Image (cartoon, rainbow, N blue to C red; front, side, top):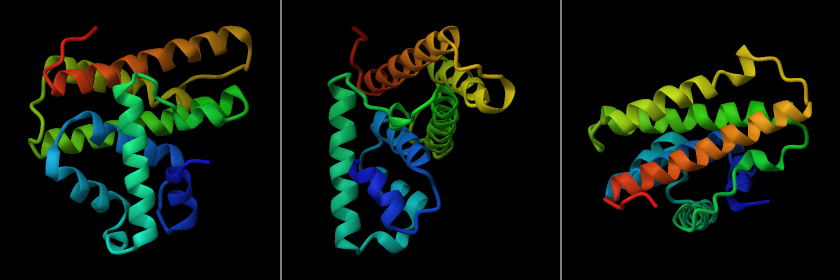
Length: 170
């Protein structure tokens, strides 16, 4: 398992692996500079700032996730889930916490709100309702829909990453 998963199990972090990865990904794609770590520790718990094992794990996680985003090879935490229902529940958690981090960044004016960001936030909010508003049958059609949604989420995080850095989308 990843260092990020170990953070959620080895320390008293009140969030799941999926929630933490979604939140962290939201912070990473937004290019907020030195404001990044204080916001991350505020979310995870400031009591961990001076814990060497925690800091080493979080730094490795940040490096790994950022590399995945840059390389457009993001490995979602929910990919490890066994069945479609579990994947959808985890995707919903992931997306909801990605939205939380983006809303925080926008509310603190670290990032200018734009139409693209608003559209992504709206779409992600709808995706976050998958676990409560839709019935999943674990059939091939639902798996196909899940893969389409996952691809949209991937494309969206790359889009935000590029936008916040002034990179033209490829």
